[in-house]
Length: 292
Ligand code: R5P
Picture 1: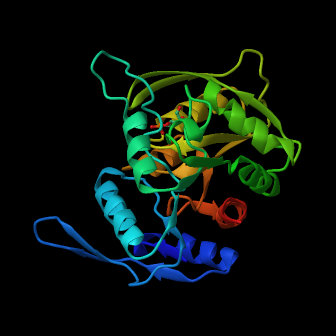
Picture 2 (picture 1 turned 180 degrees about the horizontal axis):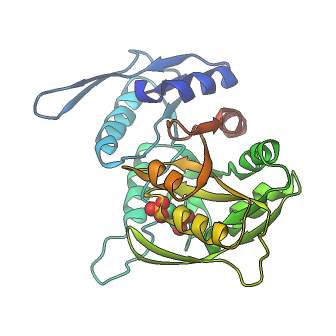
């Protein structure tokens, strides 16, 4: 059985269809003081999968842990979390003395609550695998990059995939492979949450070429905005963007458009108006191999 919250109903239904399994929504009540009361189906099968993306994570964590504990008491002996966007993966070291390594703490909490965690394009930088984040548990990190690459190839013939920073190399390379697209990456310096500088590789000729920026996540959109400005200044015929996770907080989408980005395409890992590519099949395939 797949359990989900109603604010992720679209992906939940697609995933349940792909898995051909029953889907139940968790009934949620918010008390006036902010506490939550959750109601799950009174009897759960041995294998239960909980779908919960962790965009805006702070308010979701408590309910996630309540739901996991409740599911165990209601019969779920093997409990898998599918968290298409897994938050806190970027805080993977103490950058200043005393700073909490959130990735480690979140990993421990999830490992205590779930037998396995499946996610898509987690921002793992200094650790190699998701297993390392989840002590003693199974972590499955999928990538949506090939799906995005296929989509881009149908939308922009002969596009050059441009990763806005060095870390995006893994995604542009994976996206470019199947459709045989060209790719390159920029270098990025982040000065503050909303202040980044992006530089194109020297000698990269973009004159008259359609460019598609491709990244794992767009949050404030500043990374994509700066990359788009650079690409247009270098003569790109058009600039569009494709991301796995469209967090796109506040006015990020409007600022991307104002910077000259034509289309923004995202996967349905995070519900957003830019969703164009579904990861339901990718998740279903991974769950089949994990649970069989
Ligand atoms: C980090 O390096 C990620 O891959 C993204 O480039 C980054 O998180 C995007 O953040 P923002 O949209 O706030 O610039």
